[in-house]
Length: 201
Image (cartoon, rainbow, N blue to C red; front, side):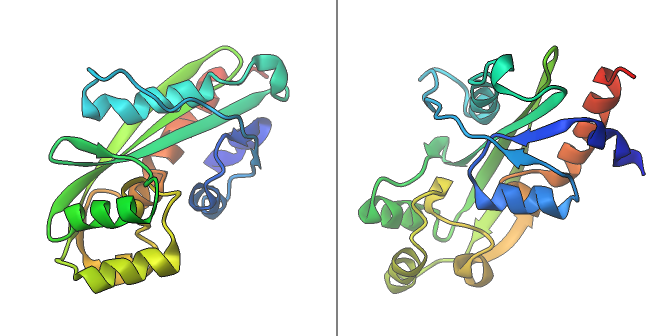
C-alpha cells in the first residue's frame, strides 16, 4: 500500500478534537495525540483566508523537537467559520452560540481548515475551503440544538455531523470532511508527498 511509508513515522495529532481523531482513524493512519495549549490569536490585519493556516502553523511550532518522539510527523490543524468576511470562533456562552447560529441561518458561509505537517527538519502547510448552505432556522430549533448539543468547542457553534447538520444543511460545496475538521482527501495526498520527501532509509 502507498501509505505504508507513513508507518515509518511516529505520527502525532496535535488536536483534542474528537472529530479530527475520528477522521484520522477512518483514514487507517496510526497516530497518538499530544496536546499543548496554544494562543489562538492572529494579526487583526490578516486576510480571513490566511487565518486557519497561520493558526495551524502556530500550533505545530508550539512543540520543541525534544518534546516529540524520534521520526515524528506532526499534524496540526485549525478550522474557522467565515460569513460576510467575519470570523466566527468558538462561542463564549449560550447567548453567543445562539447569536452565531442566527447569523448562519438562511445563508451560505465558508469553512476553512488550515493544516500544518511538521517533521524534525521540514514543515509544509495548506488550507482547504468549503461552502456550506443553511436553511432558515427558527429560534426554537437553534435553542434546542444549543441546549442539547452544547457546541461550545466548535467554530461557528455547530457540528455538521450532529442533529443540526441533518436538518439544516442543504448543500456543501467542497469537502464535507473539511467542515468536520480535516480535508481528508487533501491531507492523505499531502502526507504521502511529505513522507516520501523526508524519509531516509
